Image (cartoon, rainbow, N blue to C red; front, side, top):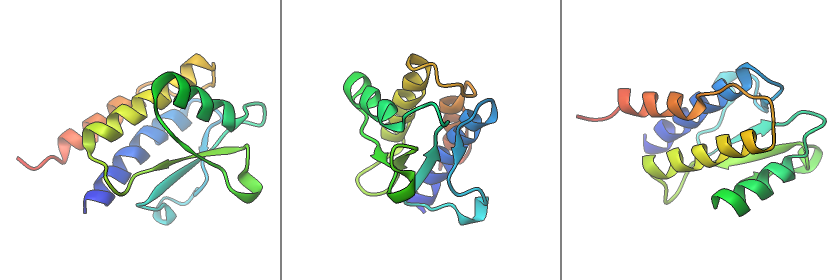
Length: 124
């Protein structure tokens, strides 16, 4: 249940990022998206490794790279294991800031969408 909740928070953020730009989920069918990892495809002219490097070196957030045909064209956000809500919110903030630093077109407010979801689903 924790993995599903954190995964949905990530998906909420990514949905916003994808709304106003060329970023897109790798799994286009929402029901086929994983609770372990979210893969985001990047625009043709944006090298995904630049996103990974700036995210790591500037914001201390480590992202996975694309595999096989997606190498250099995607980055992956893991959301399982030793991870909690504040950690994923921080990671999403680092990613959103990286997209801004690199001028990657994206919808603004992805982190807030994740925060809203986590707050709305919090156990009281």
